[in-house]
Image (cartoon, rainbow, N blue to C red; front, side, top):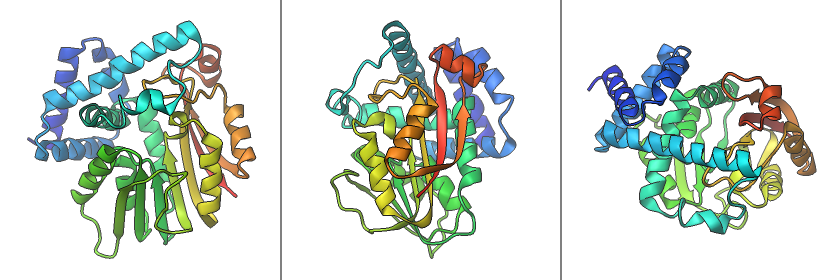
Length: 301
């Protein structure tokens, strides 16, 4: 199948199993660029080569939609996330291979189909330096889409990814292996506890941690570790959501100020920030109604 035909097939299958997605996807895709459509098509063709058909991928996407809706309803009713400890979600998500694969593929697809996730990915692609060299560390690469973007757009020579989930390690590695990586670029993806495990190096010229803080019990310790690992003037990119319930979100951030205070306590500073409110709402409206806001931070020491 061509890149665009597989996209059309996926969209048709998503709407078939969840008709409520029809208007949402039509509205969202009005803003997608030809380059982003090509990237989505390339990802779907990669999945096809792994014998993952559009029926399976549509199911993966629908799991994200339905799980998120269920947790949003719980959050609006109780004003808290359903779970608050890693132990409550670890076995059901990160260490359940079948579910984790569906979760990661579904989440990867939202990077193109959801306007807020697409805007976050754009911000990352436009923020990562294109003229620096050295070592790049990604904490929690998940499905591998962000690390793949970094490889395509930057000049870092060594890419390292650490994740608690063996499934994520395998999925990220497979995605990178499918891309044309220059001969002088090396990478290594492995399982590691960010707070307790030994990394391959003591200093990194770029550190990326996308959508991790909401999954951990001690986010301050993660930011402090990043500060110790960052080389002078390192590119540090961190994202996390506000008021964004999901099946494995255990750390609730209720406002941008809470995040800014956490960064300051870790001895870091916010150089740039991007707030992406709930689709169709302003930031103020999203905060007032406790709707999800995606936050991206470029940090300094």
